[in-house]
View 1 (cartoon, rainbow, N blue to C red):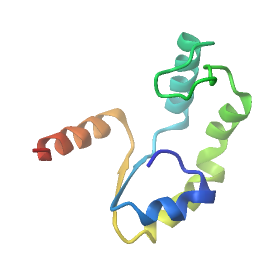
View 2 (view 1 turned 135 degrees about the vertical axis):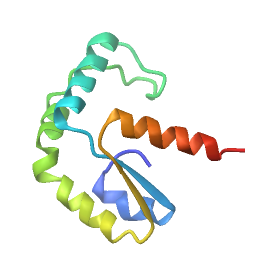
View 3 (view 1 turned 120 degrees about the vertical axis):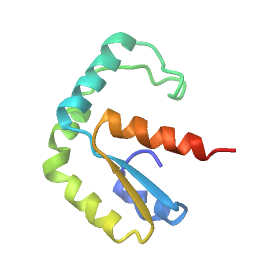
Length: 107
């Protein structure tokens, strides 16, 4: 699952057996978005649909900034009631460790 759009969160969680929550600091998130936007400005990334070029999006930057205070607690509450595995990753080292362990489990 990618994203935390609350309008469809319950439906997406129905199909999940595990949720990986990237609980990364707002500063890191902002830096990464600004870096990605700067180096790819005007181009369409491989992971984006046609017609969606990289651009500066002030409302999105504001959302990132306010996410910890306005949205994180509600998302954490939903995940507490998920009833299945929830992995919370707080930094790049934890993410790398988690995904290396997952690769080891692949056939």
